[in-house]
Image (cartoon, helix red, strand yellow):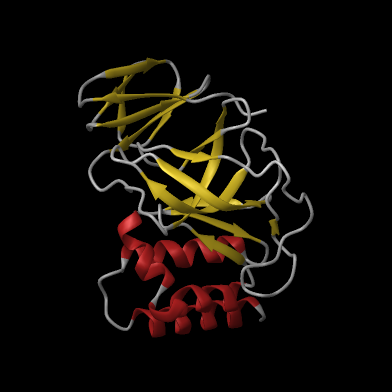
Length: 231
């Protein structure tokens, strides 16, 4: 079972840990871990990280998000969506535990239909059905995404990664053979195929988002990579 996550807001220069593994927007001063930004600290028993508040994802009704089950409040679940704001999931008790359908119409390949309960650490894709005045979101239509890689990108880059009429993400899927679920919150789930290449392609799009003709450039790049791998 995954250990629970502690959260709190921190400011630049604030000490947030000692002698612990750290990542994201922090520095180490000897054994001290210090935040370099104003943001949300997330801490488990063996690690600590800080998510900057600038440019974070704010839940929006209708968005599809990918998150990790973080807390179980007696059958009501809170998901970590890599944002300061909470997403709440209330599963249907009469829900079917069978296999769900691949969202791309390819059959029951990577999503389980809505279960009656979840385990801490489960990766879930779901749609935001409502958002209140403090940006706490309610989720609907959840699906469990099993045993994949989670990649975090800047939420502002998600439309570019998906592309017009899903052109970019379909190119990446086609040439890597990977199954990919993109959350508007910037968490992307990848499974099967050439996962490393899919991650590399997503990072390239994130870094070169403002370039024109990027879909064609990515198509040519992935074609070349695939061709070289067959030699």
